[in-house]
Image (cartoon, rainbow, N blue to C red; front, top):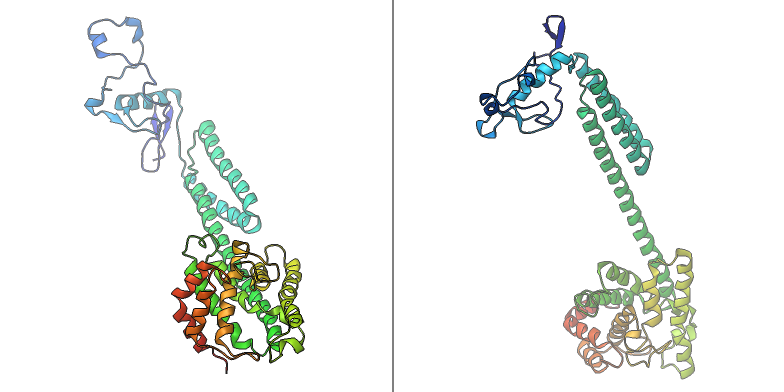
Length: 398
């Protein structure tokens, strides 16, 4: 039964025979008269004469309260009054059989439109368009309710809109994250390939650099990993910086490609003039990396490599080269490389010298604490010196 008839008035019912009530607002919509006033005859006759009067309770203690869309505490007697008011004014709310079908159609249409918008527009435009669409659906439902008295719920279409937006946005975010990861992986490979190709230039000129590169790379990681937890280095060393240090370490002697074989491969001690020319390898290396940095921009990963190349022969007391930097003027990468390179030079055989034992190398480094090397870097070395020995053995020259 779709309607209940009262004389000539058709009262629309829902599919299960219920009446949808059009509430006028919160409680006290209609005039209340106290029973005590009536019993005491304090109410003028004209106040209730010719009117429909409902007798009931409104006190909360009597538990005759209902919850409505407008008021969670609504007297039951006023619910009855509202029903009669709807009938007298013929101001009904109806929900036709086709309302559920229209809601289902709205779900399908909004689902398709939102999917299309999210697939073909950017995040800003899609948010704006879907917001406008959602407001439009809500306003259409409100207009239908107010002007025609037909209740068509916008809830399901809006839920689909929100779910589509959330799911497709998450999917797009996931796709972008995968692209970023792939791009990061490609950039990492480019970095490694660039460093390896540049460091291979050094190996073609200096026969002592093959295992030397691998040893110094591991030495510098040991020092950096220990120092990253020390107060003076915590802000300078993190996992990313340490990774760059290790990748860049092989480039520390790249400037030797600009040094003459006559000096580079000389078996004996260099003359003062030859040594001055050998010192130029730090400048040659810096200029080579600077040229690459100009191509790659200010955020280039080669910044760490440049600091290593240019400053790993500086000394803590300021007597090093090429600039004679002193103390903390020397960048951290240069300080770490200075010790790693010196230890390897001491414990490895060269064309101009024989190698010395690990213990003797440790003594020499301790003696040069505060003169050649940063005292804190030496302290770190002493903590991991046995690991240095193991690396030296593992990557010993043939």
